[in-house]
Length: 362
Ligand SMILES: [Zn+2]
Image (cartoon, rainbow, N blue to C red; front, side, top):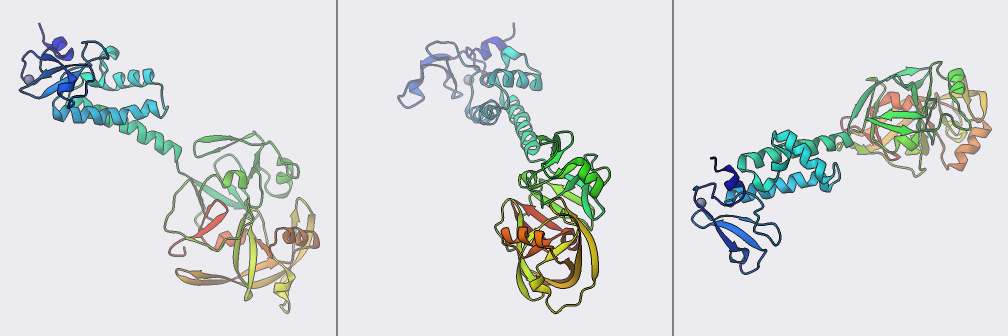
């Protein structure tokens, strides 16, 4: 007959094969008793008993095995302590992973190799859970009528100028999660977008969702990465206009406070900044609040100062805000709007109303 049941019940030492001794655990734990214990003195291997009984918790363990059992418990117990499964199901899962019968799946009964396997499969499980929570998604984008459309079949327009998101299906899928959103907004519906922006549009991705994830956006490279954790980017001077993205820069040599609106086809700057400049023409634009209007255009020197790589200066086209838009900008205490053209210049990272600039400026 095999010794296995006697080994697993603590009656025989698994290291030397001799019979064990039942003692009070106080002998091992420096005078503090935790009940009965089976011990093999020559091997200094021992195992405790279930509370108030002489039924062993498993096989005897020497110092090496005790260390591995301790580590196996530390890692495996996280699975049920952190509520990924309840305790019973966690042990059922473990028995399947190890190919051991459910009633024999107790870390107290395991040898060093099995403990190592417990540590390995439990760590893999926990790492997988973690990566699902922080999953990163890279999607292609396309510019349609100067609006950023996320090209993943949801037909969403990325709009940092909208405080809210909506989608005709009532759901937006992002980074493996499904987020409930309204099917339209009071001022903007799918039909509005289809008539004015893009004939296949289904909704807007606005700041309520955008602020929940880090975004890296590059129109030049046609992609947006959602959920990526960039550390090397430099924070640009922030302006507090939550939930929107605000930025301070220089326009024609003057400090300008700007709202960054990826949903704006044109950028706008208050007429104070364009005094004495020659207009370069006119353009038609629209706003859900104002309707269609014509704006006078100016080329303005736009400067991002104090970057690690120095300052960046480029010329960008700005419209002159019509009175109603001017009043709205005034309420936000900003001088203008940086529209989609701003995103065409640089790869930018966006996190919680804050813009970040890439380390090499690209
Ligand atoms: Zn022994």
